[in-house]
Structure formats: structure tokens, C-alpha cells
Length: 256
Length: 256
DNA sequence: AAGTGGTCTAGACCACCTA
DNA sequence: AGGTGGTCTAGACCACTTG
Image 1 (cartoon, rainbow over the protein chains, first blue to last red):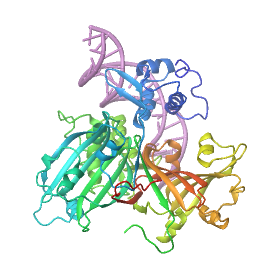
Image 2: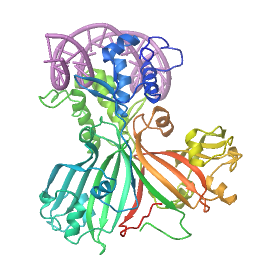
Image 3: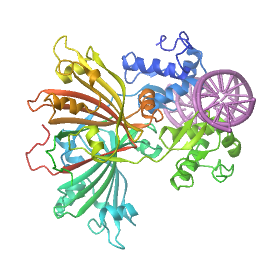
Image 4: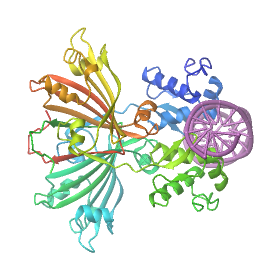
């Protein structure tokens, strides 16, 4: 521990800014397991004194590690090495619900509802769902947890005609749809990455700015009608999406 | 412009930290197009004076916007609203090379080589490629650009036996493999999100900490042998991966 | 040469948690 | 009550870009 915060070796010419040098020291200590998940770091003021740097500079080094999810800070308590989250791998070619997917691997699933209700649709929702004039939209917004760890924020939108009582949805949305004979059989997803804003980061229990996977999904009924439009944010460090690619024969198109 | 940086309205009770209030003001100005891509913001010292805040606090607000890719800063020059990047959509079910993919949409492609050579393999590479004892690994590391904009960092690894002269690869790796009769027909990809480190961010021309899509791909020959192991980092704001999902009939498995 | 962002400091007060 | 992280300040110097 002393070695990490020793005042020696700083300011070697060409080593770059002091906060980056300290950042590197701590990151290497974590990578080499000299700092293990759950370990606490000295208080910022102590790190400053030990290294001979100002607290502001120490904070800048620490903040970068917090922002990339390697450290967590708790006000009034201290700074800790982030617990290692086990990565979940999910096959991307199967249209399954979160609930079913987790059940298949024997994980518990909890949903924490943020909002459930009927609203006036946003233009984007009118487009995606093909809503008629005056039709309302049912919005289901929840945090998905598995074994107590928040994994994703899911914001689903459906036609208010299809789901007139969104507040009665409890567990799996797909199960509810199935009971109505409206289970989707096909979906198109778009995947990108984005930094989590303060609100979303808070819901997922990570620091603002941490990378998240943003997934937009439009689901279709056998008739080709759109049934669901869902925007999800997954913790980037907790999820792996797996997909298999095949060589397309000349001229063939797979994505419609 | 004056409205954004007016000293009025700060410190309203319950509005949160000053740097977040300023962050919100600027973000809203960008979202509402009152600040358009390419527009310059006042110098930090001026923003500080205009708002009545210290430069450090102004910097903290600005830094957060830089870290999420909404602003760019150029030392000696100024602070600007980030140019809007056009999102590229790529189908995830097709095994195509970057070069071919871009050619299909009439985009130019440039590769900037970072490294090309034979090395002693890392354990991870031995595993993924099934390397024999003493076998070397060919590494190809390059930045992929389209129309001058860096889009991705691609780090490919192949058996040194398959590709004994990696320094002779110029354009499409898949083309080279095809000429050897070694074109992959199947691949498994794993997708997650991660904050870009200083080095990778620099290569992609974005600020450190910006969210990137991390893709690991293992490609197979018709014989089932692994031919290629590639780790790529895509700019999260410049790429959409599109994938189609289908409902799997009972008992069927799609991913092998 | 002047102006810009990049780094760094010492010190202060606040809000929260733990004891 | 004491310690922790969270915020904020004024001022300084450096490295780089621009006119």
C-alpha cells in the first residue's frame, strides 16, 4: 500500500501529468490484484499527504477510476475497489424476455418499477408504434435486477389500445402479451454505446459517465404489426451480448 | 449566448451543485440547437466571469460535456460544440469485412496502421487461436477511418503459421485470407460497452472516458478451425449495430 | 505575442455516514 | 463528534495554437 502512494518517482520527466501518474499506479495495483475488490483506499487527504500531491490532484486521479467503474466512493465512508461483477452473456439471436432469460440460468429476477401509465405519445413513439390520432401510449419503465444487482433500465412503449391497463403488469411483459395472443415473433434491435447520465447511472448504481449499452428494439407480431418499442440501457460492464455471424451468399440479404 | 452564461438563476435552493446547473444550461442549449455543431463557446475565463463562478467550476461543467462527446476542446484554440457524426448502421448477422461493408455504401475507407508484426502470443491469444507450443502470433492493429473520420480500432490476431508476413497486409484482411483459401464462414461475436482509455480515445479522436462498443470476434473456417481473433473498439456515438431476433421454437438452439 | 486550454496548489465549507 | 467524500474558490504556471 505504501508503495502505491510513495512520494518517490513522481514528476519524472516525460511521465506526464501527476494525476495520470497516480491514476496509472492505482490502476496497475488493481489489475495486479494488489488491491482486491472490496479493499478500501486511504482517505483522499491521506493519499494527498502520502504522495505529496494536493487533494485536488489526488481527486482527479481517483475520479477517473470512479468514472470507469473501477472504484466506488461512498460519502462519509470511503473509497473502495469496485466489486467484480460477473458478466452475463446473452445470445442476441433469440427473442426472449428478460424474465425468461434469467429464469433459464437459475437467477432470480426483480423489477423495480419507476413508472407505469398511459400518456400522450412522443413523436418518436407515434412513428415506431404506428399510433393513430388521439391514441395513447402505455409506458412501462423499470430497473431490472438479478440477485439484487441492477443490470438494466428498460423503457417499453406499447399502444394504449393494446395495453389499456399498464399498471397491472407485474412480471414478464411478454407473458402478459402472450395471454392476449399478442406475443411478438420477430424484432429488430439497434445497439450502440453511450455514457450514462446522472439519472440513469443512479438507477443502475454506477457513477455518472460509465459506459452503457443502449438497445432499441421494435417487436413485431406475425401479422407484421408493431407491438412493442423498447429502449433499454444495460450496464456495459455487466453484460456481454453474443451473436453468431455467417457468411452471406452473394446477393442474399438477411436483415429485412 | 448571454442567457446561457448569465449570472442569474444560479444557486437557487434545491437546484444542486453549481457545476451541474451550468452543465444543464449548456446541454439544453445544445439540445435545442441554440448552440449548433461547430459553434464556439466563450473562453473558460470569460465563462467564469460571465457566470460569476470560478474557472475550476466552469471547467468541471465543461469537462463533463467533453467526456460525453458533446463538446470538443482544442488547446490554444477554444471550446466547440462537437460536430454531429452521422451514425452508421451495420447489420450484425452478416460476416463481412469492414472494407467490403464500407465499399457497399460508397464510403471511402482508410486504414492507419498502428502495428503489424509477429510476436510471442499472449495467453488469451493461445487460447482463442489454439496456438501450438512455440508458435508465434501475427498481430494487425489499425484505426479504421471512413471519409477521414476515425470509426474504430481493430486489433486482429492470427496464427503466425497462417500469416507469416503480416507486414504485407495492406487493405482488407479477409481479401488476403480469401486468396489463401482461408476465408472464414462463421464467427461468434461478443459485444459490450466500455469507457475508452486515454490511448484508445486519442486514436479515435474523442475525449478519454467516452463510451465505446467493444467487440470480440472469433472467426472459423468451414473445417471448424479458428482462423482469426479480433478485438475492436467502435465509437459508441458513430455506430449502430442492427440485429434481427426471432422467436426460437421450443427446444431449438440457434447459437452453437 | 497573445490567447487558449491543461495542470496544480492550499485552503475552505458543506453533506453525509459511522460511531 | 469526527471523519469522509463533494463542492468551490483565487491564483499561478505551463504548453500549445493562432494571428
